[in-house]
Length: 418
Image 1: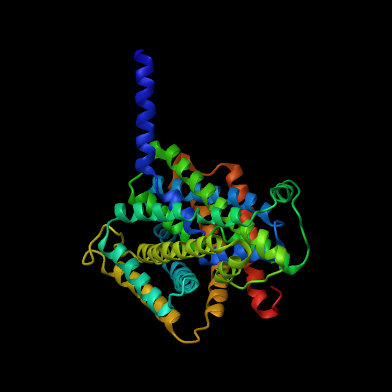
Image 2: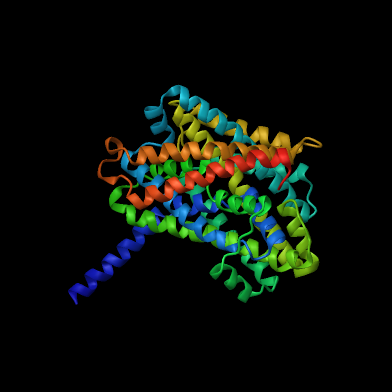
């Protein structure tokens, strides 16, 4: 009996530890399904039906490996990725990398507010109302809140993304075709299809996500003895991310693809679903886009402010007061304000902003991942916690694929092949 009681106590203790640690993995993974990601998955489903669902499997594996590296490096070193890059690559290299990341993230944040505007237009709310209100609420949450409060709200946002399950089921998909596409992957050797394959895999990882993940495990004060729980958090986050992507593709494949309807952005998908799958499916899709956009519009500039301040030695953190970390809060506020102003400008070139922010992401992501892999294999930094050979193999293959994606992103706007 004593042994059983002890076992029960250990189980409850482990559950309590897990819920205390819960957050970084799920939040970082869920933010991946932002306005840009939802657009990518929507277009993939509308253009190619179920044919691209298989790409989510390698994307899932890569996402887990990269996030695990980030969490392990953050816990072992107690330092953010930006700190480690500056210390090991030097100030000049750091400056060039982070100026590029800052510009890309302003473009990405602008895209998130475009998602807010587009999703609310489905409900007949003007962008001149939705964008300023969303921007102000996001600012208040970060500037006036604490990390614990913000994290709980972010976790609720993550659950809300499951609205896409409703849209997919209402579309009455062909499950046998979905199963066949996973078991027998379909491949086409043309630039459009290959670009979409690379786009789906590449959209699961963004440069700023790596910095946010590492900063968030440090912010929670996690230790290596708790790493198994952190890993569970990461896996759950990755599963949730890929599940949402799966249902977005399915929703658009079952409705838009079968009717031959083409779309340019996620808002188009929400509007097109109404006559095909009903008001509920359309509303669920638009609401999911809104939640994802607000969620990412909060996290993305927050991550940017974190890593830029880390890179140049400024104080950073939600739990710090304005006077303790003025550079952090000024930068966060500036990114939000600039992004909102761009969206509210009449005839703002949002498509070009989206394309070029993706181009910058594509160019900078391999650089960030190369830095990560070199750092996580440095015994002076990581001690006995360096990468296993299989992690390095997957990491370098990912870098090679993303370099190809970067080249494709650069060529796509020039040649119009996508």
